[in-house]
Length: 143
Picture 1 (tube, rainbow, N blue to C red):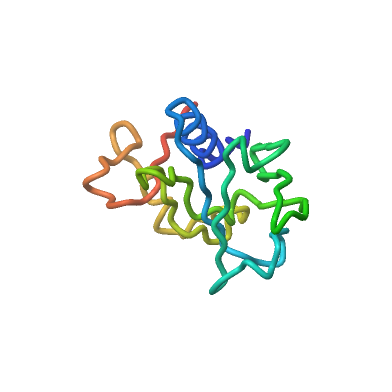
Picture 2 (cartoon, rainbow, N blue to C red):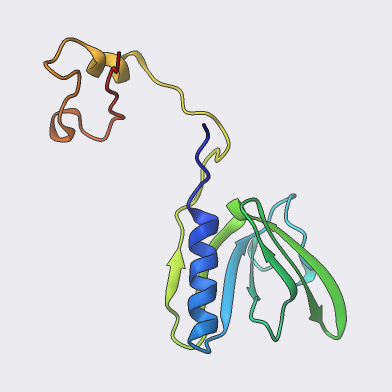
């Protein structure tokens, strides 16, 4: 079973926190070929957008994409942003929120090196303590 990423859930949570506290929610976005935003407002490969209810109409934040309609110089534009392109969500007034680390190959499956499976060897419970293995993945054999 593939577990969904936590990022879209965190984005929705910070958005709700902004709304509940009457703050203006903004997102910072890395512009790429999958991002549909007014390109004339992109600066240095990045755009910051107001997604508060007054600025964003029909806002949808699902597990894959953020979509809404917004006006730019009086012209209604459809915005579509992949979740992976969102760098931050924060309140304009107090500059608090979440800033995300850059995502590398978000959808690529994780491959394990031979050394990663060494922890499956013959230990008493087939598990090595986190301190002993560093930051590697830990697996336990269940029979």
